[in-house]
Figure 1: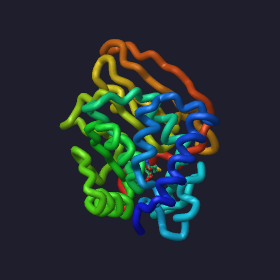
Figure 2: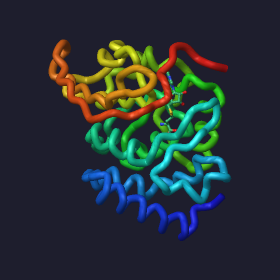
Figure 3: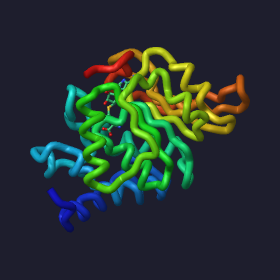
Figure 4: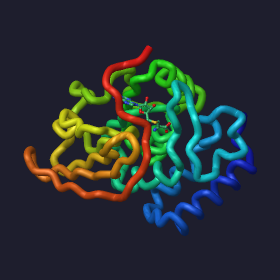
Length: 216
Ligand code: SAH
């Protein structure tokens, strides 16, 4: 598969839709979505639909999030160039690529071996370089590389992973879907001091669950 003018044209229509219909106002996020070829992260059978606002199955019974969800989560993080970002749930690597397109320094963890391997290969093919890519349990974060400016959790957590809040810089932000399996509330924590967090909520979504441990 290649990135043709047809794909680029469809991407532009998607970006206009995200701006006008989904109220995504962060132009840096929209520019990143405009740059990343989402179809290259999907199985070829979905190629024609890759720029519709839809989720699709990826390996290991997981899903790539809707573009509008990726845009919303990324906008809530208020990404700046060279932000050190920890992503939990690499999946197929699309969201990781959007963060890298915004010139963030991305550290990413995936618990499914198939997806870890898939995304690693994909990044190589597309000449994308996360700062660090790990096969592991995101509940533990990456203490060796902490603290982070931003943390993004791309799976739904029933329990707040407090270890991740410890790994956030003061002034940093973590975006995480919180709640039971059928519905989660997109939640943003801003670390005001070592002990104080501001908590904001941004509506209901449905993500695949955040699970303990790794799966080979
Ligand atoms: N951002 C991804 C979305 C993938 S769905 C994309 O663009 O494709 C969420 C991912 O979180 C799944 O791949 C799932 O395996 C992973 N996940 C769930 N629990 C996890 C954990 N504890 N640590 C790391 N990854 C986890």
